[in-house]
Picture 1 (cartoon, helix red, strand yellow):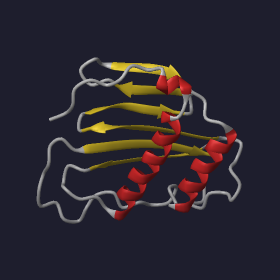
Picture 2 (tube, helix red, strand yellow):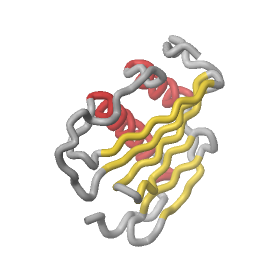
Picture 3 (cartoon, rainbow, N blue to C red):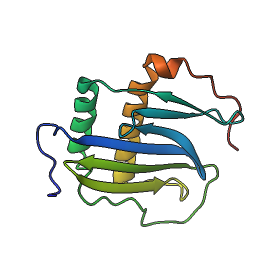
Length: 147
């Protein structure tokens, strides 16, 4: 597939994003299976079926297209002079018209590349959409935190 995404969202467009802290990337938004996994921290995880509307998918697609998510992304910082714990980490799988890209980034080295920041903003945008869904709101609250 060319690195350019079609202007109009194609019929076949799905994504999966897993995110969390370090090795504990338990949150997941998966449009391939229309599922959501929420990290409850000390209480494990909770799963719900969730479907994004066509309009929500189009808005996400537009954001992905705007950051050229299917082209090459620089996700590892050039300077790796420190380490922080806990750190955020995301992994992505995006499929457009049968072509799939996989990305991951980590905040372990104290700074994010510009592309990683764009993926973080995108993930937060998607998580905000999902947080407004009734199925998400019915899940238990997370308890505890990560040190």
